[in-house]
Amino acid sequence: MTFSDFDTLIIVLCLKKYSVLGGSFSLPPFLTSKIGFRQMANNIIKNSLENHWMPFTDNRGFKIDPRLITEASGVYMTSHKNTKIIDGSSGLFCSPAGHCHPKIIEAVHNQLKKNTYTSPFGMGHPASFELADKVSELTPEEMNHVFFVNSGSEAIDTALKIIMSYNSATGQNRHRFVSRERAYHGVNIGGVSLSGMVNNRRTFPVVMPNVVLMRHTWTGEELKVKGQPKNGAELANDLERFAQAYGGNTIAACFVEPVAGSTGTLVPPEGYLERLREICDEHGILLVFDEVITGFGRMGTPFASQKFDVTPDIMTMAKAITNGSMPMGAVCVKDHIYETVTDNSNPDTIEFFHGYTYSGHPGSCAAGLASLEIYEEEDLFNRANKMSSYFLNSLFSLSDHPLVKDVRGIGMMGGVELHADGNPGKRGTKFQKELFWEGLHVKFTGDSGIVAPMFISEHKHIDEIIEKFRSTLNKHGN
View 1 (tube, rainbow, N blue to C red):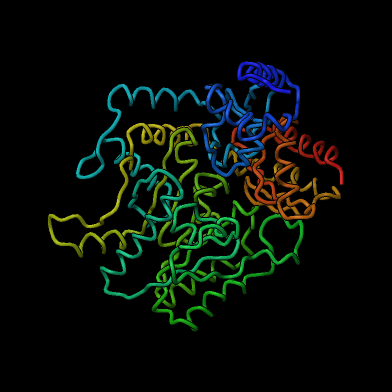
View 2: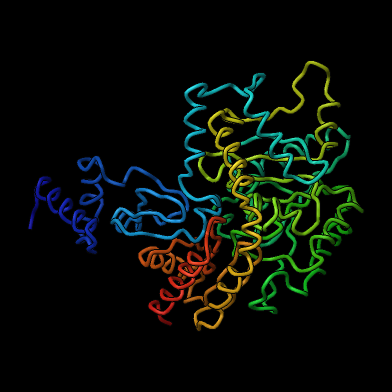
């Protein structure tokens, strides 16, 4: 049987229309071959999904069965099949005030009518200075200097360079960095070097040298524990072992997520972060908290550092700084770090040779200012703190399901780990797709779903998230 290009086009368009209307299909082999469907998608169907190489996605599978969001408002999103989906992960943990908040839209619109771009190198605009002031009002004392970037990944690489610059200014030869197994610190080379998640490193072997990893804090001994585990603080002594093995004066910094988020919500044991702070102080090591996920209310406090009463020397942040509406990240440092770097440079010279074209972009700063104003006016951090107990109790009700291996959680963030089905991650990948068509978005990493509701959520929204999660578990089977 032979088909002309026109015949093939008609077949593909009909199947696509069938899919959009809710049907499912498998393309015949001649259409999925390189000279069949792919060639037609590239050469004829100009409105296909083929040209976009998507991040962290099974591109081949997605383009056969896409999951597209056409609009969103509050806690809900709408798919291209006109189904309603409740957002159980606040996007990627970045939209606590809900999707399409009108105040943010208005602020960005008004800003872009006045100024769409200002070079951040040797120039500035008022909004970036105002936003830095507002951020520093939320950070711990003595952390009042903010460097703007465009993402959490850029924030980590910027923090690394600030540390190197600081040590150069003080004449210290500290060239080693400490991170942790199962850590996620973004996808730039610095963050990949610090990463403890194997799939984020496997195909990227050329990374920074002199990075060592502490053990992660999930031992598997305390399953389904709400809040901080009682045991495990001694794992922080891995940092002391490195100091003894390599010399504490060679270690520049220790990077940790206060709550390891992307790996599935690993809550720190009681006393763990405090012990890291003690060891850093003993050896002059800078302590860096990656608060890209935990920052801006996720723990019921402005930052996790306040939740756990441990102050780092440097904090990275992103995501909720603009409620996820515009790309932005930031690094906040203790005052003495900023002063050391700037004061040790010659007058009238650049002190820190680093920055990005879009650092402190006017539109992003407008979104950031509006978001922080919303958090304050709507009392969202306190609302998150008050909702936490109800959310965690509801989340832990899933513990009795036979497919659930573990549930972990603190604040407005929890992890539901499913039993593996053969290869790790196979079940989680499939389950996330099933959740979507059941009307729930939850981000999975491997077999762990990270549930992080919006702070505007009411009890009925938490109930809906848990009910849809459980019903999908029941349909998934063993």
